[in-house]
Image 1 (tube, rainbow over the protein chains, first blue to last red):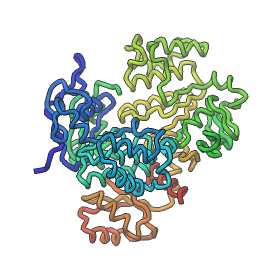
Image 2 (image 1 turned 90 degrees about the horizontal axis):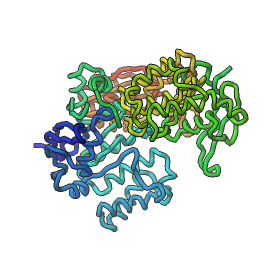
Image 3 (image 1 turned 180 degrees about the horizontal axis):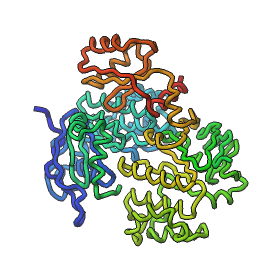
Image 4 (image 1 turned 135 degrees about the vertical axis):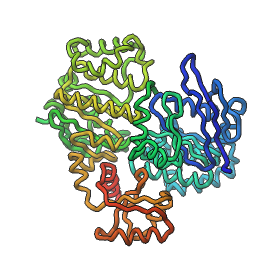
Length: 247
Length: 307
């Protein structure tokens, strides 16, 4: 049987009488690239915050890397990586300092940090920029570096919140190469995006509408189910009926 | 007369160390829906800020409705509407207060140009008394557009109005723009989403401060110089890595469920290619010749520039 790294059952988050996340259930396999889609305000961010151990659910059950989202949030945080378009790295630290800082925060031993950061800088082709401030790098490089830093401590799962927003089309594809590479080493990828072509690169995709998971399957099966030519059409059919809108 | 003219505009930051806009020239015709298409950091916002008289260029000249962006900045400011990329209305004023405020600034009233904003305003009117800071992303965007339109501008500048917005809201927003265009307003809009390029009459593809191409989307696509193939197989990622190692392949990029491919030899035979791919153990291989999209063109221009 495939190992499950995320298991959610009837997970719910209520703010007053507003159900931001309404009884969602799904399982994510080890090494899977799991796309988490939905319109603005569908509840994606709230659900992701719970799974990252940053917010408690109102009811329902969930485990992440085997740890309980009510009782073991600190253990969850140690076993995941996170990156988003908005928060990535410290712009006024150098490439190496950022790696060292985040490696240290996640408890990677100093000797190991040195060894791994040399490899990483080389692999990213940033050797000449290693001692430059991150703020001076082009956005595409920043995002690739941010992703590498997010998986530097070899987490079980990495959460990517719109990692490719605003990035040029070539870098966007290079970024997905890195995602595939990480998944091949057994890291589970949990990713949100507004680019529907990227939904096609996921093994399975969920689409949230108004706090609920309205669809969950492989892109091929979803297209067949909704008689659609591409994921854009699938998304449109589902999200068109949404009553909520927001951030 | 062109509604917007950029003549050899260059802009640097940080004492010349960062080149944001690199010798850009272009013209936007009156009543046109013109798109600046490019990723973050391409120079789109700098161009908008120069045209809206908020930033001085290092070199070159720019004009809006025939008025010079430096000398005649006052004239320009009363004739344009500008919606910056970052939400910049007063968060602690209500929807109605914001609209009133911007109308008054331009010596107008909500009522005098009501027909122009009606379609958009109707959608946020139920929240008239809500503070702007408490609105959802989609509603903020609609309010910002209303505020940019309330004085009936001749030229409307929209800097990435759809960034971070979901597919459904993006479609709605573009429908609104098309309606505005019928009122004769010139619209200059920027976007990092290549698919939105097709919704503009003319576009400029911009990267690293340089315009790579300016034309109608149809003509840019028609100018794609080589045959483009779409390929898929069961294991798409392994197919992509295999294609990269094949000598006959020039470029290969993932496009959703397909890989878009160009070959070094134009007259190459696809059956030979198909066989070569199948020999590497791929199953359900399909290859077809396709029409390129704007994203294909953009990637091709980017690669040419870096060569």
